Image (tube, rainbow, N blue to C red; front, side, top):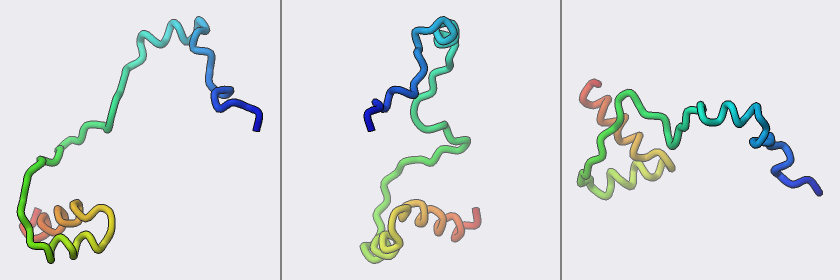
Length: 73
């Protein structure tokens, strides 16, 4: 229990890392999707929302899947 959580981290001031850090590609956030979804506003009946929310997290994705199936895409 006496070990600090940082004990496993490499010494980034070592020459090995000092040579490689400037070349490191910085990636932030979620990877970009090939076909990103479009944010929109849509009005749905409370019963429809309640039905999909009853299934727990991911209810918006389930609505998207149901609409995709309905239109055949």
